Structures are given as C-alpha cells and as structure tokens.
Length: 310
Image (cartoon, rainbow, N blue to C red; front, side):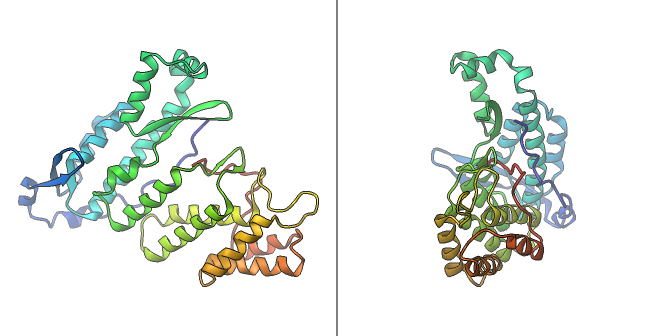
C-alpha cells in the first residue's frame, strides 16, 4: 500500500535562521545534560542549522538507515531556540517520509524473498535483521488489504522531538502520538468508536484555539476536518443510518448528544447541534439535509474517499 503522502511539509523552514544569529557564539561550547532512565546524555547546543543541513545533504534519502543517523543527531544535540528546533523537525519530517515512502513502494521488488517469508510467518536472521533496522529507524511493518507497508512507530516523533521543539509542536506530536496508537480507518471503514472520533474533533479544535499562530495550522485543520466530516457523513463501509429503516444509528445519535452537551460553545459543537436539530425535526430519518450543512461550512462527504489509516 502506498503511504498517503503527508500533507505536512515545510512552510517556513528557514524563516527563523536570522534571529538565531543573535545568540552569542560562546553558547556553542556549552553542553546540556538530559536525564534518561539509564544514562545522562551530554547534548551539544546548536545555534544555527548549518551543521544539521550539511548532515542532511550528506545522507542518501533512499537508504533507510539514514533515518537512524538523523535520529541520533537529535539525541545528542539541542537547538538553542524553539524556532530552530521546529525548523529542524520539518526538514527531518520531509526526509523521513521520502525515505519511508520509497521503502514501501519498493518493498516487494527490493526484498522479494523476505516478503515471502513474512507472508508465510517465517522468522530467521534475515527477517530479524530487517525488523531490527526498521525499529532503529522508528519504523514498523504493517499490512492492509493483503499488502505490507512500513510506517512510523506511534511514539517515534514525540519521543525524538519532545525535548527539542516549541510548545505548539510538542502538543501536536502528543496528539498524533495518541492517535497513531489506534488505527483510524481501513478499506473505507472507521476503526475507532464514534465517541473516540468526537474526542479527536475536540482535541484538534482546541489545539487550533490554543495555538492560533502555529505553523502546523494546515495539518491540524486537515485532521479536524477529516474527523468532523466522518462524524457527520460516515464512510463507505461505516454508515450512520440503518440501511433498512434509514434512521440514525443509536450510537451515532448518542455521540452527537454527548458532544453537544459537552462542547456546545465550540464551532464544531455548533455545527453538530445545527445538524442534530434538522435530524430531530425529521425524526432522525436520513435526508439530503447533510448537503446543506456541508456546503454551509465548506466540508465534504467522506464517501468514495480512503482517508489516512493511522
């Protein structure tokens, strides 16, 4: 399966570079001690992106082991400002997904014997070595619809960047860390409960309210819209209305009511409440009233769409 190409590339990677030059050069010689469970890591403080960009340029993006080298760089270095740290993250993200997508696309062609072993659930030194390499790079092997693909481990980005990021980026990674641990959809079917889906809507709307100037605005709005559209329209293989009676499913109705009760003052709460009132006037029977709501709030139906898996 070809990994859904990340929407989330760099909008302003180098915008903060000039401000970082104001930091005294003596800071470079400092080191910061970071406590971990087993050791104390001496982190070199970086006052610009020059060394990091040189490292990026020296690495082969199509060699998956390059990700491990970059990960170790972040373990051993600390950027002097949030702006520098965030810029380094965006550059890493682009490199990471280019490398990961290339591996997924070439997986069966590059490792035919290994893939055959995986299909047969065999495990030998070749399989263990490959899985170990993926683990070192923050990747795992997944399967969907009969195909293998590689994707990021749920906590990889958060654990790698939590001490090297701005508050908005750290919160963003926390939210995605939680979501990545539970698959969202597969084969146009919702894999989480409607209440969990509602929680995701609220979390992303709150994030955007808490960090109105975040550079991750597009990414956060993507998740907010996808989750809200799913709660309002379902998916091809997750219908909101009973096929025979055409009445709203009880669990969906309960989720709407709970969201309205708890988040009536939020924008998403007002949208759901408006739609709920229309449904209520029609005894919760399906109608084309959803089209009015979607058009009014610039939203789309999720039918005929395969959203992100995780």
